[in-house]
Length: 421
Image (cartoon, rainbow, N blue to C red; front, side, top):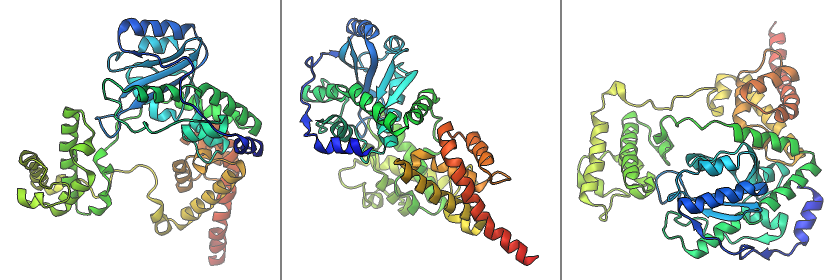
C-alpha cells in the first residue's frame, strides 16, 4: 500500500453501507426467474462481482447455499443454488466477463459444483495482499480503500436456513454492492506500485487451476493428532474419523457436530473397551445416546482387530523434502541453504511490501533448497523454480536472491573441504 493510499484511508470517514442501491432483490428460486437473470447478466457490461455463502460448521461439505452477483446493466441477483442446482447457463453467459471475487480459492470450488467457472478473474483479497495491505478481509478492504463499512455480523450464520431472513439477504447483497469499485481502486493501486502484472499472472493461474485432487488420508488432519504416537491408536483415530464422516454425510451435518476432534483423540488415547469407560471420556458424556456410544465403541473394536502389518504408518506418506526441523541432522548444507533463502526472501518481501508467502510459495523454497541445481547461479535457480511451478514474476524477483543465498551457504563447506585437503 503506497503512502498516498494510506493517507487517503486515514483521512476518510467511513460511511456505513446499509442498503443495496436498487433495493433488495428477490431470491431466484425457480427456472423462470433464473432464465431472466441469465438474460439480464448476459446483456450487462463490464466485470461481474460474484460471491457465495456456504454453511461451514453446520452442513457437510462446502456447497454453496446462496450465490450473489452484480453487474452494470443487470443490477444485483441473489440465487438459491439448492432450488436451482444447475447454473451452467449463467456460467456460459458470463464466460467472457471478468469475475471479481474476494478470496477466490474459497468460493471457486462451490461455484464449480453448480457449473460456474471463470475464464477471467480478479481476486480482490489477493490483490490486497500483493499491494501490501495489512488487513485483507472484505470489510477492512472496503473501509480502507473505498471508505465504506460493511456489517459482518451474519458472516458465520447457517446459510442452509430456509427461508433466509431478510437481514441475512441484505448482508449478502451488500457483499457484492461495491466489489467492482474495490477492484478498480486496487487495480489503480497495483498499477501505481508496478505490481499489476504480478497480480494478473496470479489471477490467471487461479482461474486455470484444475480441481484439487482428493486429499490422501484426510483423517490425519484431525486436530490434536500430534498427541497420538502409537500406530494402533492412529488406527483408532482413522476408524472413528471414517465412522463420523459417514454419519455426517448421511445426516448432512458438519462432522464436528457429530463428534469433536478432541473426542476422537481422547478415545484413541484411552482405547476403552466398554460403554461406561467410553462415556467417561471428553465428548462422550451423558447426553450421547447409548446407540451412538456403541457405534463409536465398534469403531474402536475394528481398530483393535487390525493386523499389526496393516496398521497405518506413524507418519503420513510424504513426497518431497523431509520436515525442515530434520535438515540440520540429515544435511547441514541444505539447512544452511534453506535458512539463507528464507532470510533473503523475507528481506525482499519487506522491500516489495507484500507477504513472503505471496512472493514465493514456501514449499517451493524448501524443494529447491533440498535439491538445488548443480550450479547455484541465478539462471539455474530460475529454471528450477519454473519447473516447480513458480510464476514468471516470482522467478524474476526471487531467483537472484536465492542464488546468492545458496552461494553463501556453500562457501563454508567448500572452505572446510579445502582445509581437509
